[in-house]
Length: 282
Ligand code: GUN
Image (cartoon, rainbow, N blue to C red):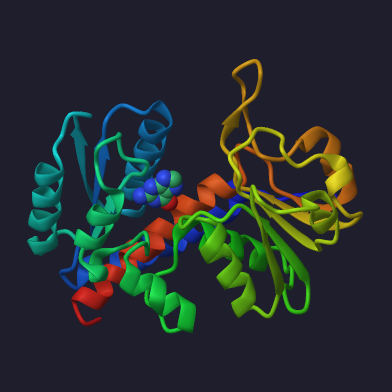
């Protein structure tokens, strides 16, 4: 059993981005990312801080907007519009979920597709569907990069994704399909979820329920990818996979923390670099 080291792979990706960023800066282009955080969700605050740190590491300019939970839809949309028009900002990310009363879809659609480094805009989602895209969503793309780094082939494998969110589950299924996986998406209405999961060669858990995937749901030798960032009964950080009991059945497994999370951020850096290049015709 191999514990996949997301920190190590993400450090390698960020190193590459840092080297390319140096070259861009020498050509007079300094990549810039704007991150918007509305409200005071503690997990979101941690994610946003990590994104800011990664920007500093790779040499990007980063601008952070911490807005109160009472921010109106109009105020948020006008900030997005302002950032769309700024030449020094290449990527715009609004951390989700937004506080109640704000319309996430409207905010996502307001972000210029050229600056949509999350790849959440419907134009970018549609392009992913047909395989002609500039940006891939950070978490699924980070997972694909991690599989590649460990020489885990998807071709012809039974891939089961648990969770159908727009952020992870749906695009994850699409990227596995692009690599010729045979993909099943399970969700809260799925019958026989355990049996389906147990058929998986590659199992991706993105449900947001602590330790949802138990050892009896995992095939011997499976690759298990844990997208969860949950808290257990004692308030300790854990994933969607019951790691201690599942790990010995796996060929590869990602830990929480130190698995998928760092890869999400590394992909965000890649996307922002790409956005800067595209916007400057490089
Ligand atoms: N919330 C959870 N994951 C993400 C992500 O990748 N991007 C944004 N904007 N919000 C998130």
